[in-house]
Amino acid sequence: NAGVTQTPKFRVLKTGQSMTLLCAQDMNHEYMYWYRQDPGMGLRLIHYSVGEGTTAKGEVPDGYNVSRLKKQNFLLGLESAAPSQTSVYFCASGQGGHNEQFFGPGTRLTVL
Amino acid sequence: AQKVTQAQTEISVVEKEDVTLDCVYETRDTTYYLFWYKQPPSGELVFLIRRNSFDEQNEISGRYSWNFQKSTSSFNFTITASQVVDSAVYFCALSESDSGTYKYIFGTGTRLKVLA
Image 1 (cartoon, rainbow over the protein chains, first blue to last red):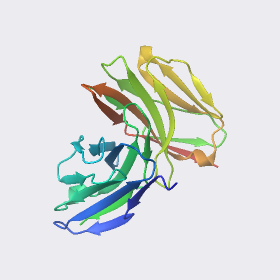
Image 2: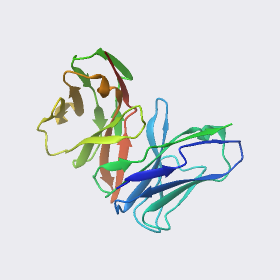
Image 3: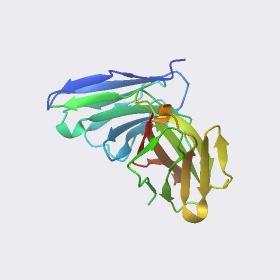
Image 4: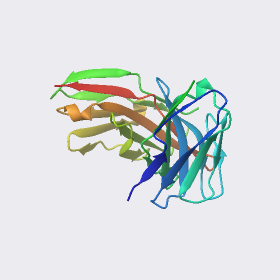
């Protein structure tokens, strides 16, 4: 099992460009999450999904959109990238509730 | 509001020393769960342990041990006889439910450096 995978691993964007981060999991988990990790701020939840076709806002959703068209995939989109979105993005999946989450390897995004 | 505080930003120890990572939490719920995750230099967070609010028994797993004290709202993590491979960022997290929605809050992490 690959667990949780993320594509791409690194990306550099110019301000105003758009991109999509792909997360895939092969554990048949209902719940999927997108976090961003910034120095001194831990992990902050951007958006999450409780099942195929559903999405919900987390703590810092502005500037991002998500889609969960298939149970195994969770896409994070940046429509018009800004330097403030320079961060490391982590996808996670899990059974929801009070269960542990399984994380992908992260995507390091730099917006110039 | 729920909150997780890891006051130690960075700790350096020499190999074989014991080290304790502190975690203090705030919650209004009576039912909640606490977690520890490890983020090695490779970047991927790895789940270490989960404890629920009704189980205050300490837990030991090899060189790792966890001390949960509701009276002080703390869930501390001790590594005994530390090794270089323990060098990582460690995150404490809290999970509670709010009107049927589960919220997962991470602390800011403690970077542990174990020197050979």
